[in-house]
Amino acid sequence: MSTNEPPAGSHAAAEAGVRAVLQASRVAQMMYVMAELGLPELLADGPRPADDLAVATGAHAPSLYRLLRALAAAGFVTQEPGQRFALTARGAVLRPDAPGELAAQVRIQLSEPRWRPWGNLLASVRSGRSTFHDIFGMSDWEYQARHPELADHFNAFMSRRSTLQQAAIVAAYDFSRFGTVVDVGGGQGQLLAEILRANPGTRGILFDQPEVVRGADAILDTADLRGRCTIIGGSFLEAVPAGGDAYLLKSILHNWDDAPARDILRNVHDAMAPGGTLLLLERVLPEEQTLELGEAIADLTMLVILQGKERTEREFAALLDATGFRLERVVPTGADVGIVEGTRR
Image (cartoon, rainbow, N blue to C red; front, side, top):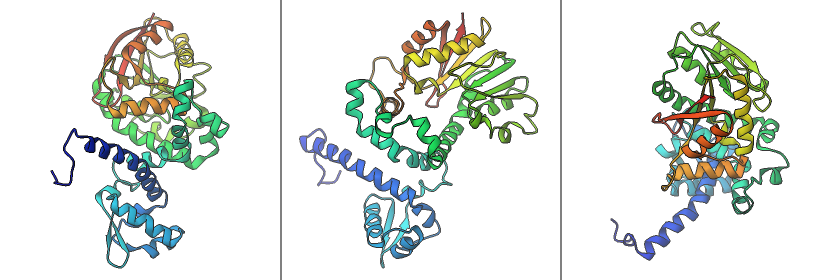
């Protein structure tokens, strides 16, 4: 330990920790601007002068230089003689072609329609509701529909995140016992495609809003899947296609508070035969222990953006019981979602 660092557990160490958190909110915005200006891509091939980067980004040259100095202090770039800057390993994570989902996550989670509702966290905690509509005059879904660039960032983030989860989900659960799996709110079918590939005897129904499933053919109409999947457009807030042995909802219910979540589950219940299987792929919070920071932040994000919530096993059991299902078990996947399995009564 450096002799300049305060002893662990001391008041000075506690103060240093609080200052680091205060600084982190500013560093996050620096990182966002770096990504939005495309600096990770511009520096991918080696060091470049600040003035050159200003021309390439259309930024105010003196201000961009000041940002680059700050990014160097935060470890995203290194500063070289002649006001030249080079990308570090930390900065390279923000390249769009970098492995993982962080580059897309930065673009979506640090954008204005994300940080402004978080700035209203106090109001949400006092009222129990999202203030997104108060700020922007529309829901988050409507905002994305009117801002396609933001929607592209969100879809890229969710697609990359789902890709990381899919292998774990398919490995953790036996889908082969189902003749037909209905993926409710399944986007463009990435997860359903992986399930069908791993289970050649299973057929699929992909169900999501018409504008979402419009691009699903590119994923599901391939040589190994052709003829095994039906694509249906619609809203799970109104009805769900019948004919499935299992109904899969991945990262759907956490977007909704309990009352609309029950409405969604009732629609699924109406579409299922008795004894059918419900599979909720969701983050499952521990009952009475300290959450991991990522779990806690995910839960508060649902509150401030969508008025949704992450749930414990007990809370999932209550939702299922109220909508005609029985909770059977929770299957861990090794990813950040578990498989909450229920049976239609």
